Length: 454
Ligand code: AMP
Image 1 (cartoon, rainbow, N blue to C red):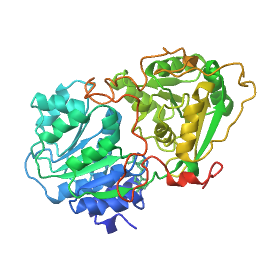
Image 2 (cartoon, rainbow, N blue to C red):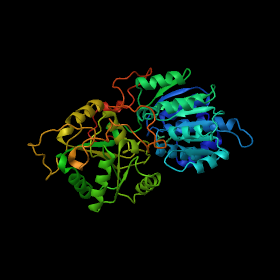
Image 3 (cartoon, helix red, strand yellow):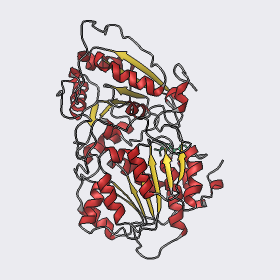
Image 4 (cartoon, helix red, strand yellow):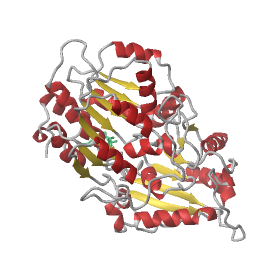
C-alpha cells in the first residue's frame, strides 16, 4: 500500500517520501482515510506505531484543501502531555507540511510566555500545546481558539494521569461546537472512555499494537542484584559491554540526579532529565543524547514520555516501575525502526512482586542473567518500596513517587492541574473499545522468542 493510495495529496506524499517512508504503518493505513473524510477517531496506539504521522498527514491535508486567505486563524489544535512530545509533534507537522503554505507553533510552559504571545500575533494554522500553558494564554486572552476545526488529544491517558483533565475540559469549552475530534491513547481506562464519550461523535475505533513488540525485537534481561549494589552493577555493565546511548529509568527525580552524578564520577558521561530541569537543560540533554555525545540519559517515566529516539540500543530499568504497563512503555524506547534493542532490568529483592506483575502482563518470563561478582546476598530481606526509591540510590524513602502529586515541568507552567491520581496508572482490566486489545499489552508478546526474534 502506498501513501498516495490513501488519498493524500502530492505535496504530502512528497514530504513523506523525502522523510524516507515507503509505506504507511498499520495505524496510518487505517486512520488516514477516516480522518480525511472528516470523521472522529479514537485511536489506541502508543509512541512507536507511527501515530503522529497518522493524524498529522490527514490533518495537514484537510487544512490545505480549504485554504484561508490573509492572516487566518488557528484551525487545528493538538494537545500533548509533555513539552517534549509537543516539540516532536510540531516538528513532524513542519516536516510533513513543508510543501504546504501552513504555519505551526508549539506552546508549552516553563519558558517565557512573551515570545509565544508575539508568535500568536502572526499566522498560526496549527497549534501544538500542553494544556497548562494553553490555559494561561486563554486566561490572558492572548490566544483565540474560536476557529478550531480539528482537535487532537495525543497520549490522552498520560494527560489524565498527569492531572490535566480539568485543563482539557476548560480548553474544550471554548472551542467551536462543530469540529473534528481525534483522541489517541495507549490504554482505555474508564476515565478515558468517559472523556471520549463526551468528546467524540460516532468515532471510528482503531487500535494497533506497537510496531516492535516486546517479544519480537527487544532482548529483555533481568539482572538480580542487591539493592545497595545497583549503581556498581550498572557501571560495570555499561563499561564491560561498552554500552552507548543508554536510557536509564529511575523511579524518582532525586534518584535520577544521584545516579547521573555517580556515573559521571565513574567517567561515564550522563545527564538526568526530569520535570525539575529547565527546558533548555532538557533540550540540550536530549540533543546530545540523540547525537550520541552523551552516553547515558537518566530519566523518570514522565520525563521520558514521548521522547522519540529511534534505534535506541539500550534501555535499563534501574528500578522497576510501580505500574507494570510502564515497563512496556519504557522498553518500547528500544528496538525501534526495525533494529533490535536490549532492555535490562536491575532487580533487587524488594522488587520481586513488581517483576511478577510485569511478567504476567507481558505473558512471558524474562530471562535472568547473574553477573559474576554480584551474587545476591541471601541474608538480605525484602523491604517495602515506599513512594520513593529504594535505598540503593541514597534517595529519600518517601516523597517523589507515583503516589505524590505530579507537579510542574512535564506539561504546563508548573501547575498540578486537577486532582492528580494516586497509586499510579490505569485501572487494570479497564473496558476497551470493540475489537480492541488491551492497549499496552502486545499481542505478539504471547509467544516466547527467546531474544531477538526477527
Ligand atoms: P510515532 O509513533 O509517531 O512516535 O512514530 C514512531 C517512529 O516511526 C518515528 O521515528 C517516525 O519517524 C517513524 N515512522 C512513522 N511513520 C513511518 C513509516 N510509514 N515508515 C517508517 N517509519 C515511520
